[in-house]
Image (cartoon, rainbow, N blue to C red):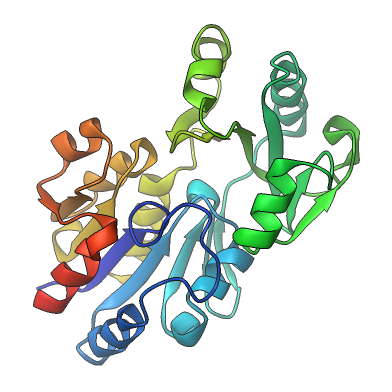
Length: 265
């Protein structure tokens, strides 16, 4: 019997950069029906809590949130159920190295909000205007962030993977969990963080077994959830390695593939 449904957001439920009002409202109807049948829905994303809450506002009080790539777990009342932060010195070192690749922009995800260098940047405009992030531009990220840091993300509109593959990722993947989230993002969190770890915590918190869980995803950072689920689905538009690792492939995001599966449940 299914008791927990966990889904990535961007590329799985909605296009990257989608804000409030974009998701098919039928998802809300199905989430309510699942709750009536004892099935809990979990939104799982690299997004911050505020952005995720806005996407799911009509049902936010009835679901759980795995935010910041697994660094922060909460409910609709923004109660902190679980959080994993990076050491301040590690954060400063990551930012210092990222600055050596001038094509990249940098976003720091704190417990309170997110931070970037400049309001006059593609990253700031996209995250605030489209994703609905709470974000502050602080100039020097090595000195200007007074917050516990959950994640550091490197951004390029279409080449985050290529720009970091020569030396940055080989250096840092031994010190932090560095995972690609679409063509735009390289996310870095603690080895004790991640979507899979957060899902395992939430299953224990709710008293749900992996065999009673199904998950949906499209990107590299979703694969670690598959080991904690009785059934894993990749949407049809997912990266090839994600489709290979999933138990099944459902229709793509553009066809509301996740919604089709949930309706069958």
